[in-house]
Length: 66
Image (cartoon, rainbow, N blue to C red; front, side):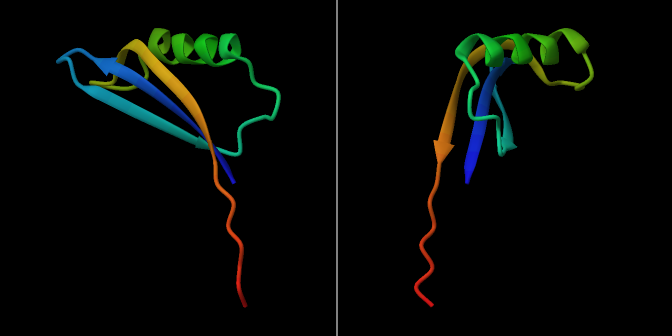
């Protein structure tokens, strides 16, 4: 399972994380930056993100034994 993790800075110099499961396979850095900026610009999250810090994609494989 893949997870897109987007890290934002907050008004009080904290760190805010938004995780999204199952991101598209062909996401580019620019796609993610645009999405992060749109989240900031929307102002929809109280005490939420004000700056873009970083982003990564975690790819986790689970192998069931039985």
